[in-house]
Image (cartoon, rainbow, N blue to C red; front, side, top):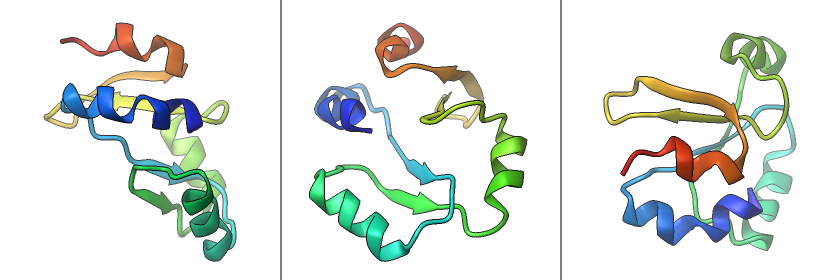
Length: 91
């Protein structure tokens, strides 16, 4: 997430919206503190129900798990690294 945060302005310039989803249940205050401490510039939410079931249905194999969707919400890439983001995003 810190690598993504460093690219926040670059992503915004390309009209890319980043949303962070905490896939395991943690204390909301701890999550809020983490966001504040590391100055995470993106909206952050947390899976509220069965996190394991949600991760399975999303196809999560490791964390962080990046999912790229286009403006029509069609998934165009999944499970890639932050370093691969530029090649996944079409200008």
